[in-house]
Image (cartoon, rainbow, N blue to C red):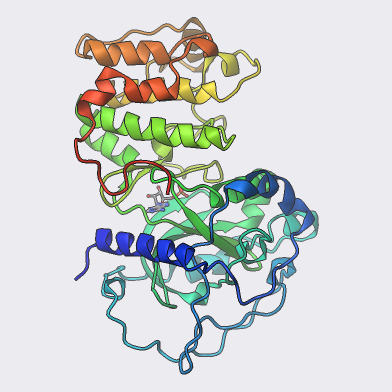
Length: 414
Ligand code: AMP
């Protein structure tokens, strides 16, 4: 049986060969963008890479993806079930053999009782379908295009499942469902739209890929990179804290990913362990660009979210820039090594606010001098004095623990 790692590498190879073959050409006509789809896409257009799911050349005897009704992005009615497909020809690719686990019917069971159709402006805002992007048109997708496997988790707006595309080359993905009416109730439809559009244009080994998205009457589905080792936060809870070696490796990957995001003018603003996933080789993946407020049960899920990672300028309501992420990286480094964030105060928000505003930093003696130096240099009140990310990656503590042979996915953006 193939390992997930092998499959991941295979997917990467396929993407590369698609790029090299100029396979970005789509057999479908380019769609017009809808009005509300424009700004962020425009901003990020120059960073867009070829879409990862070029239409494979239809083979004479083989059905690929069933055709969809025209312009589904603007439709809020249920789409008809596609005609039955002929099974694809036998294929040696290992990913077909990978066990994606048993589906519990959760998408359908949940859909019976959860959510409702939305209409008007909200419906237009949430008619999200990556196949209509003018810059990166892709095939139209539907839930029936996937074999669904085991549940991976539940988010605030819906469930996440491990899936495999029925169409070759049978990509393994995480499919995340978001209920439109709940998004509207939380009044985050614009934010979600914007963040989906941003994430789809990002390519970095430590940033979770969003390959595409589609919608039906009640739901939006995100086709996400499968993070094989799950949530980093679970690991942190399990072990209490991480060794300095492990912490330094994560900090190195975070600094690289944040540099990349900032170079694309994307400020994350919400770096914390709960928003980080782990790839199949244990590499860190920034996995949440804000649409997924975590489900009850996780910590720091109050209405206001956590304060622990907020920098002084945000606590004090001043203007902020990308240096908020430098601060958060300092907090993250501390939490990895110590096991709790540096300004946490059980007595309440006010106490935490005060400690952040004063930079009341107390570093336990077990923390090495080098790690202490890095944390102190990131947790500076003045954003301009915070250690630049390029310096974080050159810091002796980070350099000391950097693996000598970089792993296949470590390094620069693909
Ligand atoms: P979220 O809605 O992002 O909070 O997702 C709910 C849960 O599903 C998370 O806590 C993860 O355990 C899991 N999950 C979400 N996205 C992925 C992914 N891309 N790969 C693996 N597991 C995921």
